[in-house]
Length: 409
Length: 87
Image 1 (cartoon, rainbow over the protein chains, first blue to last red):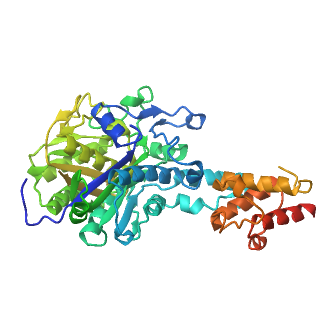
Image 2: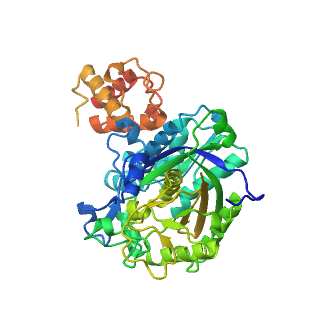
Image 3: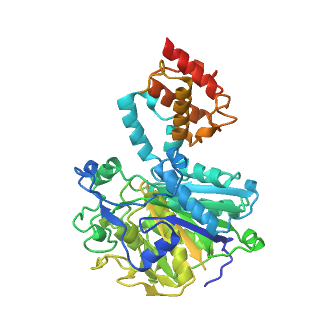
């Protein structure tokens, strides 16, 4: 690794939690990635019958929360709570001064399912039947607030909202909180749960979704010539981050480090990616500078790669712009999980930590025929044995948000 | 819907216990006439609104916001529903 005076302090990753379409926890997520499983299925309920795109990647919450606990939490808060509990336990239930403990959990959409179901209550039964829990269930900061209450965080509870970059932006913000001395421990990540006919219809009207209904598990295929859009997913990824000093003092096991974050914006179009990938490239360069590393240090990339025709190529161009001739192996978690929107960046940062820890980069599922215009070393067919020390994880969101994270061993 | 006008106090108490179990998971044996909603049963202000709405639906009575403040205990609610139903 290139040491550099520009490097700012890295922070320790001491806990991981995830509920994803690949399974109930981090272990199932890692097993699913390494074995190339898919979490995508066809939505066969009557409410989805008229939709032009009827694929999704969902999670199973059965038995994960008490009935009473669940009834005042939107599904997006429920997935965040489940992942946060796993991460907190994985970190060894740290003893930390509550006034030095913060939470940053992003969401792209917030409590959409509550808004939609309560709108039906309003129309059918009137305003006096609307739930008094409506507002805390629909607010986008609901998942962050739920996690903050759960662990008793008193150094601040925050919710970056930047569409599909929200989970990554949460980790970038957590890094800032720790570096600036405003907290010793931050529980950070993203959550999303909006599988419902309305969001699906909206994304479908943008022509953003795959319609490969006859082969659901083959629908999410980043960089493949036959890709035709993303698959809507749900779930949550949460990490426990803490200063190196705090982790060392309590003897915590450090799984990896968050060494840098780079934030940029396109100012190009509200939803379309800048075809040149200029903003994405600037965020990658900024993240590497922040970590005090150079392009040649990157050992693998967990790409945003949603499986849309335009987005995947713009991102591939950004890699070439930011990394020059260096072509590290690239993987794309969304080929397995679908697109978890505001949870994606956090879930994929966890995937990057797992790859750093194991020295194995998972293969991109469904990549049968690499797009000629995608100049990337895509990991195909089987996972690649590849011990390395630095991982790059990229996330981009509607609104032109570009967030890159650098993780190290 | 149950008929509060013909229900006995025991039946009304059992009905309130059902509502509290559904809304807040409160064990039925804690739902006694002298139990205070906030201090004894840990019912916060938002959940209390749910309890009121569920009682209104169950017995077809109206519990206006002005009356809500006087409903401190389970017994208060029981008396109120009983008297409203008798009107």
